[in-house]
Length: 132
Image (cartoon, rainbow, N blue to C red; front, top):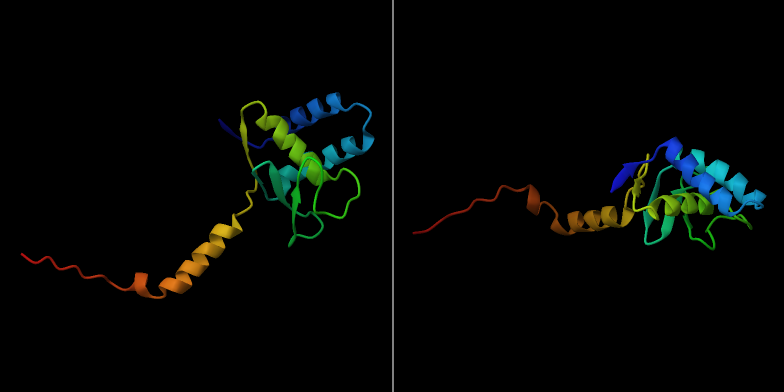
């Protein structure tokens, strides 16, 4: 089942994580940021990795796992907290649809390569003849 990202759903998942980690103040702060940024920042979940655009550098994409992130933070960052929120919702059997989806750049690059290979071939009219 798919469902859209909503603030209420993100807060509910964040609350469950807080209950599981009641004394981790840095995680709680990261969850606060993640709740808001999952609604305002493009992201995509693939193979238990969260690809998400940096809030401070919009041209950068960070990849978060449960144990680390490609950002410069030395402790639990909001990217990792966002992954925990999405994973918590996924654990209920629901696939969360991003408010702002992150395009799959590999597919876009593959299309550009194919377009360069095909050239104008697909733009030309094709005339079929049927012989008896």
